Length: 328
Ligand code: NDP
View 1 (cartoon, rainbow, N blue to C red):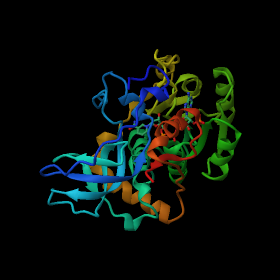
View 2: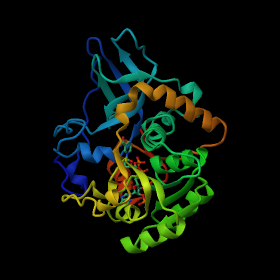
View 3: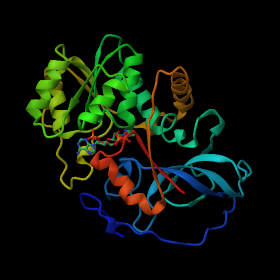
View 4: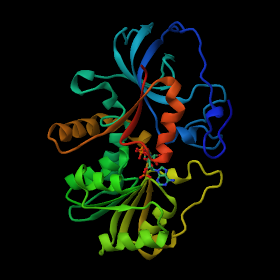
């Protein structure tokens, strides 16, 4: 196995078979049932400064998982408990004492994988990213990039709940149709095959008064086009830059001068900073789902031996909703 350079290759990874370990003193073994596949994992594969240490070469790929406690020597968890934790792409994970794991109530969701999507990090990123970092006001205009994806589709819908005019940018006609018809966006722009100038012109046509909040998931030419359409005192929530994750050379933003022109604010957002408020956000999201105000799609792929192909769906844009690997 090796660290990917640019786009990850199949040969960068290995499927390794080992005996299932025993629970360590004070810890437990979790049988993973659903594994979250996230763009962030690509960053964790690089040996670069980040909010977490890089995945060590030879270690399994770090991932958030939902699973069932198989064996426990931790008095707070019993075999059979459903748990959410930061583990890895593997059948069984050893959770050491003090490792991040929390018990989840699968009785209140239609399927346990919801703890990786709607009421998991994705939903909470959309919730706190828009409401806390973005500070939306009714009547304002929101532009979401990567809009048909897991985070983006929820950001747009929460924007509508907040009374905003919502425009989404996504790749392809079918995703744009889904933005308007399935998620209730006011307008959708297909960026595929278009120049920065063309995308900027389409944003200008959809938002003649400018963009009050740019929720940025993508970066590159799409973000550059959006920056040319900021309204005065706009807020840019910098959530992700997926167009750069597989670039050995980072591209960066070319229209940064628009921040000065529009007296705008750029806020870097990291969901890990909101852990103490997860219960608050999760409850509000669950309520919106129960009221039929929020639709959350999952793209469930199957089998650990399919992990590489499944992961790459994030970068080809094939995923239709939160990408989850179900361990069969
Ligand atoms: P998505 O479900 O949105 O899947 C990724 C999508 O990105 C693809 O479907 C594709 O959609 C788009 N994409 C991929 N490559 C490119 C490219 N080169 N140019 C433009 N678009 C591209 O994933 P998530 O919802 O899980 O994540 C979305 C973003 O949110 C990511 O940037 C991620 O890093 C970020 N994030 C940040 C968090 C934080 O705390 N800051 C937490 C969680 C996520 P399309 O077909 O439209 O191109």
